[in-house]
Length: 253
Image 1 (spheres, helix red, strand yellow):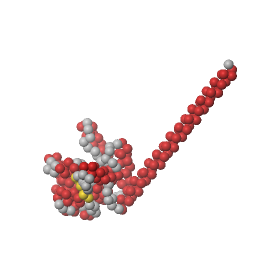
Image 2 (cartoon, helix red, strand yellow):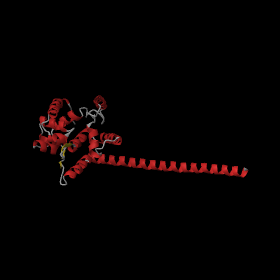
Image 3 (cartoon, helix red, strand yellow):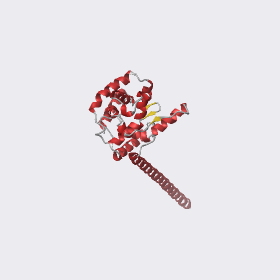
Image 4 (cartoon, one colour):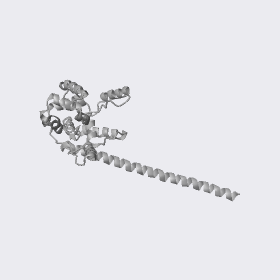
C-alpha cells in the first residue's frame, strides 16, 4: 500500500510537471507569435512612412482606390480604363481649391489632420438618424484612405487611416496634401483627378474652372458615380449653391 501511494504521488508530480512544461511551451509560442506580429506591424508602418516621404517629392501615378476601381470596372468590361492626368497645384483653378475646402474641410488650414468638432457633429447626426449620414473626415484623412487603404470598413482600417494621417501631416505641408488630393480623388465612373473631371464635365482644363463649375464638382465628391449619371439632380444643385456661398469664406494654401 505504501509503495502504491508513493507511486501515485510520483505520477501526480510528473503530471503537474508535464502540464507546467506544456504551459511554458505554449506561452513561449504565443510570445514568439506576438513578437513576429509586432515586427511585421512596425515594418509595415515604416513602409507606409517611406511611401509618404516619397510622395512628398514625387507624384503618385495611381492610388489604392484607383486600382480597386479599375479591377471592379474590368469585371464588367475587360477593356475599361481610368481617365486620369496629373496636373501641378498651380495649374488647378483657385475656384476648385476653395470649393473643395469649403465642401469637405473648412478648417483644413487650422487642424493637425483631425477635426474633432466635425467628428463630434457627425457622430451626433448619425446617432439622431440611426444610420451613417455624415463622416467628419478631413481632407488629410480622405487622402490617407484613398492612397493606401481598401474600401472595406473595419476597425483596423480606421486605426490605420489615423496613423497614415499623422504621417501625412508630419511630412507634408497643406499645399502638397491638397495637391495630391485634388489629383487622385474620384469624380465619376473611372474619372480621377481635377484635370480629368474638368475635361469630362465641362470640356476645359482644371485651370479654367469657374466658380459655378468648381462648386458643382465639389458637390459631387461624396457620390461621384451617381452624380455622373444624374448631373441635374436637385440635391446636387442645392449643394452646389451652398458651396458657392461658402467659397469666399475659406482660405486655401
